[in-house]
Length: 225
Image (cartoon, rainbow, N blue to C red; front, side, top):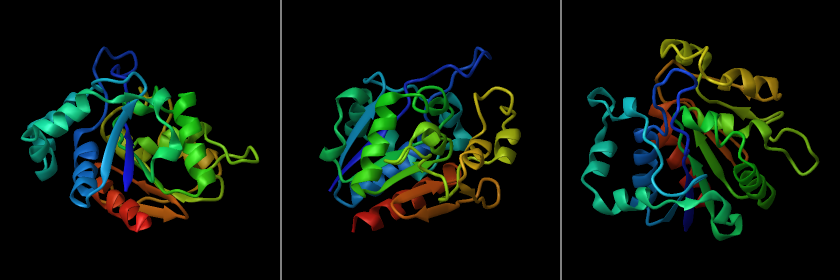
């Protein structure tokens, strides 16, 4: 079982002068779900190499069992430091696809032709893929074979407007995940802010927020059998 995890390469939080990137828990929790299931994991990002870590996700109050495990795992750290470039990965080499969030993906992966083509290839091949927190926003330009938005008519979740307001970034992000998914014709659902909430529709798995990352990874694994 081969799983590809795609991380952001974007580290600037709009015009604020602050840093962003991927959210540590949203990478670490799924990584160990897959690893403990015996999956072969490949990591990729638009620029390749070390993806930027959102510093807030490295704060003491954001740590979990999975993030602590990662910090004591030189092999996982090396894998993260040497991600492949997204342009060099081929969809047919993998069985499953997972996108951790963090705010970074809204800027680069949402607009990346390589990312769009990768997800479209997975969808058309009938292979499962999962996106967590801000990562469902990466679906904004992904289309079906007949040119419609991939998420049109599908039930999805993702980082909610109320959660974005709580972190005071509503006016900083290039678009709001909840609004964008609704605009594309998706049936958007959400649970309580900051609680795990995962939605499955066909081969698509979406998770609402960092707390949803492990459950979303479990759901992807279940689809892989």
